Amino acid sequence: MEVTTVVRRESPRIVRMSVRGDLDAANADLLRGAFEAAIADGHARLEADLAEVTFCSLAGLTVLLGARQRLGDRLVVLSAPPGVRRLLSVLHMPGALG
Image (cartoon, rainbow, N blue to C red; front, side, top):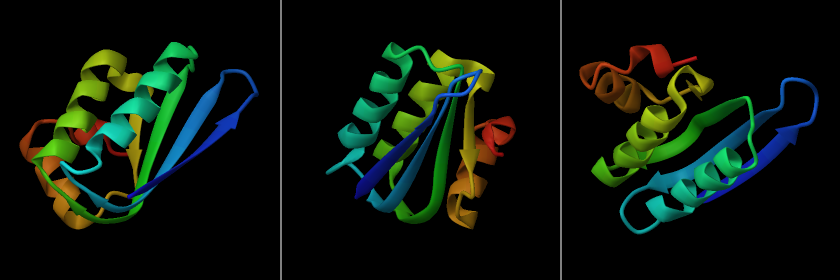
């Protein structure tokens, strides 16, 4: 998995993370670390672009849920593949989808 982070320095500060590949137990900590860094930097909004995610396991969903719990509406998931969209809806997170 690869996570590319782009920070827009305008006000309010927004960070967009583009995730590519499989989001699973082997690499979920990479995304968790990127979220933690963005939270520590005090960004007003965090966007997770999942357009290029090919697979998302429970470990990946756990990272997304943890970030949503910490950030609330400041976390938006963009371009989630259909399978991820369904899982987020089942977990009552449809509002996280941009």
